[in-house]
Image (cartoon, rainbow, N blue to C red; front, side, top):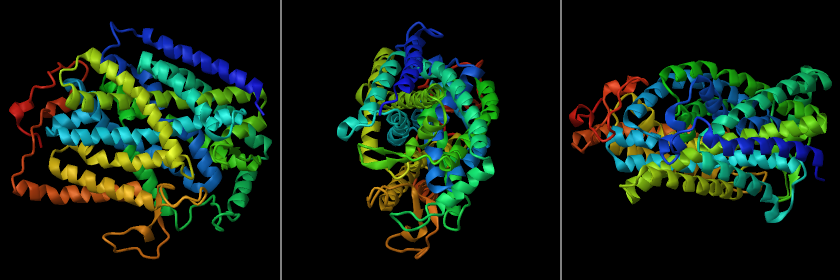
Amino acid sequence: MIQWFELVVFGVLFGVVSVMGFLASRWRRAESLEHLDEWGLGGRKFGAWITWFLIGGDIYTAYTFVAVPALLFGAGALGFYALPYTVVLYPIVFLPVLRLWSVSRVHGYVTPADFVRGRYGSPLLALLVAITGLVATMPYIALQLVGMEAVLRTMGLNATGVAGHLPLLIAFVILAVYTYQSGLRAPALIAFVKDILIYIVILVAVIYLPAKLGGWSAVFGAASDKLSQPNPVTGRPQGSILLTANNQLQYITLALGSALALFLYPHSLTGVLASRGRNVLKRNMMALPAYSLLLGLLALLGYVAIAAGAKPITNNATGRPDTNTIIPVLFDQQFNSLFAGIAFAAIGIGALVPAAIMSIAAANLWTRNIYKEYLKRDATPAQEAKQAKLASLVVKFGAILFIIAVDPQFSIDLQLIGGVIILQTLPAVAIALYTRWLHRWALVAGWAVGMGYGLYLLYLIPNPAAGRAHFGGSALALDKLTLLGWHPFGGSQVQIYVGFVALVVNLVVAVVLTPVLRARRVSEGVDTTSPLDYHADEESDLRPTDTPAAEGVATR
């Protein structure tokens, strides 16, 4: 049954931010948006506050509002990996993002693949980084659209068959149109509204709901009882409010792997490159952990939903319960229609902001590193901007196809599968910010082996909830790890994050091949950056992007 009042409240707030998205093209207006620096990076002029909301809106997404609580609801303590992940994240990336911002400003880089192209003089390696970023972004955008679909389904828009994905199409059309027109300025402006709504909703929920349900002791007790019950499909306990011997390694590798992956995503770096200067980024890297408090409170709502007796809505398009609807159902049951409508709007807007940034970042990759590099080298800035706008539409279609094709057990696995993919660019992007010791062809080989092995391991993971034998998640039992038919951990049910394993393999291949290639005097390419480029600030002079630094001598 359609919840009309909630739908009206949702529609009004959603309409307001959509109008803001269209009007954003006039905010901090440039002479023209027909340039990637303006359309895709907002003119590289965002100050501390705008950057804080932009990066925060980009990182804390439907993954935060829907997927993490759903994982706690379905599996228990494992879902808390998101907390240490966001705690260790900022110390890890504090210095690398400053170096990347500086060298990108000096050379006019728009994407991480631009940096790789300049650092190694390798169009092939840059192409691999660009394709990896495009593919890894698809499931992340898909996760945002899944969050939007869960909200609309809770309000009664839950048809069968192809029509069951109609809410997804609605969200896509709105997102696509205002992103096309306003570029990065749209999500930057809307992020203010999104964060205000989210903070209000979450603070009310974590204070009111536990008090109504008997306190946190009762909440954790109910969660423990429910998770200890056997899963009707597997016969094993559904989860636990404490980590078990089998998922402790998974927890650790998930947290570390996710922290290493996040700022390799092109959308995370888009927010960084749109900043005005290094001091802006320093203040943000120190302030952004405040969002982790919000994440922890949101995660606990998964247990609150158990205590409240919330049940996931059956997705009529698939015929299975949709755990992504748990938090929307909780709000629908425990609050009046006005507050529930506001909460749904907060989640919906919280999904649209990052989806817009992700599609823009993916479009930048296509335009700079595929279209201009291989299809039209003499493309004008206006032609680049037009290509980026069109590509931003195509990327969203790809995300929708990803949802339909993969359909993992938990929606959070959409993000974690993307992490497996994007982690394979860490040696070429993150390590290259400090050293050029790894040979460019060793990096290509490491990428190929790590990517191939990672996808093979993902293929081995079943999805018992959907009755599928492959691509059911991102956690693999050590028993399944194989090296040319050899199973080094035969019989072990301890699980590990596939992305961490694939990255280790990638690095081993790159490190082993580098001295071999160097001994054979294989060309290492020309480095067009210089050591001083990695410390430049907004007052520093720009150099043409095609001017080799230090007369073409490779920087090590």
